[in-house]
Image (cartoon, rainbow, N blue to C red; front, side):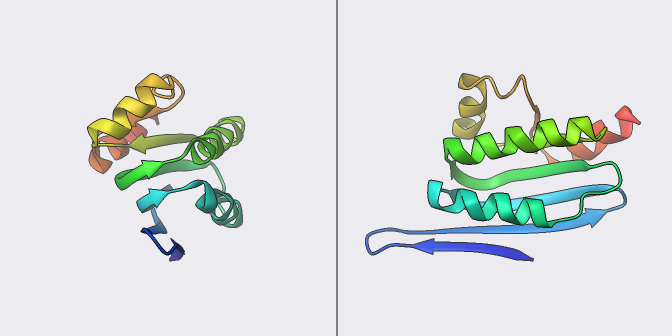
Length: 128
């Protein structure tokens, strides 16, 4: 289990990240707000995890209240990396504001964005 915790005097933001594996699919569950200050730690945690042999990744953002542009950029860079390794990333979002962010930034064209983990598993099964 990987945890990222940040706080300041006025507002407390806590980001938690957990990576689990079910079969050949890696599930990255993130909760809280992913701020600029969390992005480096997010990148480090992802780069430290072994996603071999063919990375199939579900990034669960159903408990994320905010994600900064730097973190979105990190996710895009991993998408490119995993595509070149014959893998893929599916994003799970069910919050209307986050979904709108993916649509406005056109990242819904880069990532397959689905509303549930079950839908993401089904998508990987159909892709095999």
